[in-house]
Image 1 (cartoon, rainbow, N blue to C red):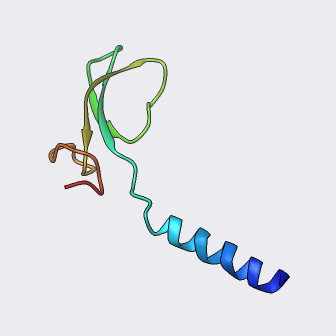
Image 2: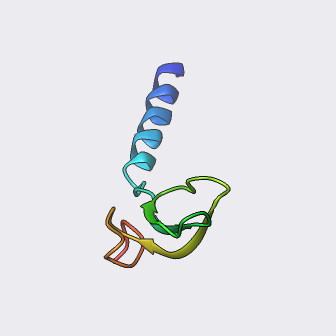
Amino acid sequence: MKKSTLLLAAGVLVSLTALAAPAAWYKWKSKLNGEVWCTQISPGDGWVLINGPYKDAHCKIEGRPGKQ
């Protein structure tokens, strides 16, 4: 009984991770010098979100990764 419950839990966990998509990319602009970066998370307090989300690391393809 315990073994089958563990196998079922492991199967559910594996199937849920198969549905996960990568994080989206965003354009951030520096308050200090106006430089623009494309990152998945904020580079810090001195940066302002200017655009996004994007599917690629070059911030050229608009949209969320994993979605059509």
